[in-house]
Image (cartoon, rainbow, N blue to C red; front, side, top):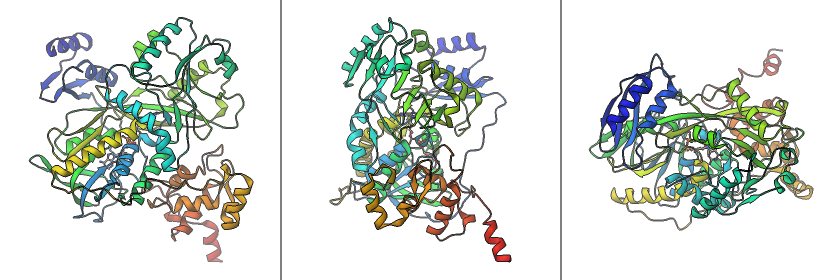
Length: 575
Ligand SMILES: Cc1cc2nc3c(=O)[nH]c(=O)nc-3n(C[C@H](O)[C@H](O)[C@H](O)COP(=O)(O)OP(=O)(O)OC[C@H]3O[C@@H](n4cnc5c(N)ncnc54)[C@H](O)[C@@H]3O)c2cc1C
């Protein structure tokens, strides 16, 4: 079989590929001049019937990869520390796993190379809690998405995070698509996906702007919306309340492996020791696996761009909608749900994302082409959309494996290593369910390492939601303001965020005190002016709360200091 694929590659791309087979992988080597072709070749070697995963080491001719982000800090704050479990990566996966692990009487450390949680894909996604209707066949993705979706109501209630289950509508332009929709109903039943129905004229009543072309729609009632970074923060804060430690600006740079065990984890903040290591490193999961000499899969990054619209813009859709792909489109783009129009939990309309294969793991720049493509595509779905309503755009990078499925397992080669890798979309949806199983894997790995595992009697699963003045009625607002007048001083006018909320955000238990950290926690700077008015006050508040000089206040990561000091103060001092 492999020989025939090699021949096919030669015929199609006129290149010779070296193929090595191991028990766990098919390893490809060679050189090609187009990245998309390299990804396509990798996919040609996927054999879902065997357990072998594709490791694609074909290099892109003339391409020099960008330097990976590493925090510009070196100290020994973690030197010689010992932990039962070390989790690498503080995205939604690392943080939800940490929260589940916080039930154990065990020392748990999460290391994250950026200065806050949710810096990777978990901070740059659509926040849609998918139903899994697009997933065919047997896969871990399907298993965890259906389970994860069902857990959302309870998890968000426990963690004090807003969650809405308003459903989603896939609109057909063509009556023939109703037949396809019927097969979706069958699939939904088979996969235990609840509340899927076909609707007709009702769609045009719900969204009059689609009436001219809509021939019906598939309603997926279990689709929901959540703020991906607020959920990640909530998971992390709850884990922290229950004893998990977080070390930010901490990159895992190598590991020491002796026999079948990782014996030490080397970071820029010292070498530490762990009974069990959990790899939740997103687009770097294969690199982390390599550090443990356990690379048996490859991640091929897939970038997606989203456009955020002003809440107050005219003629906005009221529901999460997307156009049903045509059969041709489905065949051409099997690995994305095709994007759509999402109503975020905060009430903004979000358009996107697209799906672009890229060799760059950390390139979250936005291109005019992607912005235009996403906008034009969604305008076909909802014609009144106006480009002037776009207030921000952002990109995130999905961590796809060639098999396009999640890898959630204890390593077959390294006894104390667990991989939670290839968690591409819809990994946010799947996270609560993944975390439960990974905790069980960690418990068995701890037991195998001779650690006596017991559960905390006083584990606290509930996190009090932060005060959000704009969501309160007048009477409750007055109550809060009388207790703390800072809740009566509005700093971010676009999003109506008070000084009190900003102070609460700065004093979070994770110790994150950056402008972006405040923005994500309370939305100061997320409105139409994008922080133009409130940023100086946010900076001053951080400096005051942390008793530091304003020149030390950062936007986000190390080195992103925003100013050299206050000009007025300087002149005042000189006077
Ligand atoms: C554009 C886009 C839209 C999406 N939309 C949806 C959606 O609507 N619904 C949905 O369910 N899913 C969606 N997803 C998928 C979802 O965002 C991901 O599945 C999920 O965020 C993956 O989480 P993670 O924790 O595995 O990865 P990440 O969030 O990327 O976290 C990995 C972390 O590991 C850290 N790290 C890496 N290497 C190291 C190291 N050596 N040392 C220390 N730290 C390290 C990184 O800095 C990063 O913070 C979308 C993804 C994208 C890109």
